Length: 107
Image (cartoon, rainbow, N blue to C red):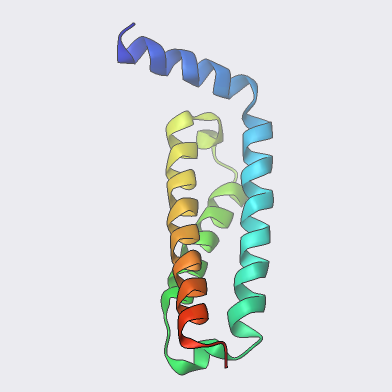
């Protein structure tokens, strides 16, 4: 099966269930923002000059804006893919922040 036919099949399946995919991405995004803020901002660890948490919050904020804005692209698979990639980049920087926090001490 050629890639174009496969993508068309995926897009049709995405259009049918796009509300479920976006709802799950939004829930994950909200949890990650709360985790990021509670781990690094409320404890004062960001004041020490570590900026990966800011990059993570920027990525997560971009995904939040992309899900909130009323756009006809919300039913497109490629638009969801871009938002999912931004979410994964935010998760990458959040995990790096946690590893840095554990290695260098939380105090």
